[in-house]
Length: 322
Picture 1 (tube, rainbow, N blue to C red):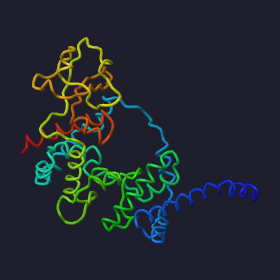
Picture 2 (cartoon, rainbow, N blue to C red):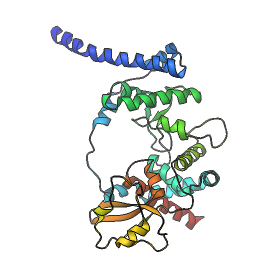
Picture 3 (spheres, rainbow, N blue to C red):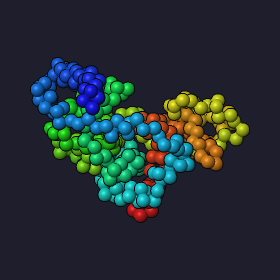
Picture 4 (cartoon, rainbow, N blue to C red):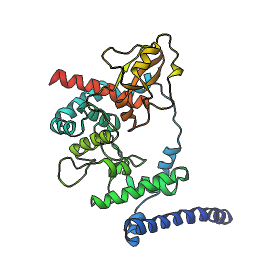
């Protein structure tokens, strides 16, 4: 037994030493490039815990690949729609000001927050410091990305005068009602109520302004549509399908090829062809420029369509009930 324990200790030492060296290298980098006090930063990182459960969740393969018919059932529910309408009514003024400032209609901001965290109810319970520390120094295949996010997190907590051990989020380090990674927080979070803090965890006004700013900075086009159903008829879809939903055609090109689109949409609108698979077969949609902007939040056509369709349900409820 003693021999076994000695061998286990021997084999674990290089791993521990390598991790410690990474941490120390990071501390020196932060001291040299970002002006952090190295000793203070050592004390902060000493509070971080390696979380094996976070590594396990990152490694766990998806139990099932969902098609669109299955995916939309998760988000397009009466409860999520009703609570989205309540969120809109509760924040009507902030949503109106966000639309005036950034050009993004309220229903899309509300739908993002609804899909991401169920309006703040499921915003994550893991300490962000633990999540980013674990993934930066104990998850080699994504270490570069999460080390950069840990750097951004420490910068934002310094700027916002937050204790780094306090903020909570997802097991991957996404934070607040809109689930911003630290780099997105620094780039897009705004103090929308003017109280001197960018609080995307508890301040719904700041979260609303931050999501709207994210859309605007990624190219949201005020007043333009997002998507519309298409009828391909006998047209072969592979001719127009691409690896991502970035618009590469115009609706005029689609129409010339024999694809039917709503007459209300101009030929000049840039679009991609979106294919969503269901148990009954594929659905085809026009992925217009604003649809592509939604995919900048999450690079999934199903995600963007869920946001769009939830936004429509919420808008209808608010219009119906005032």
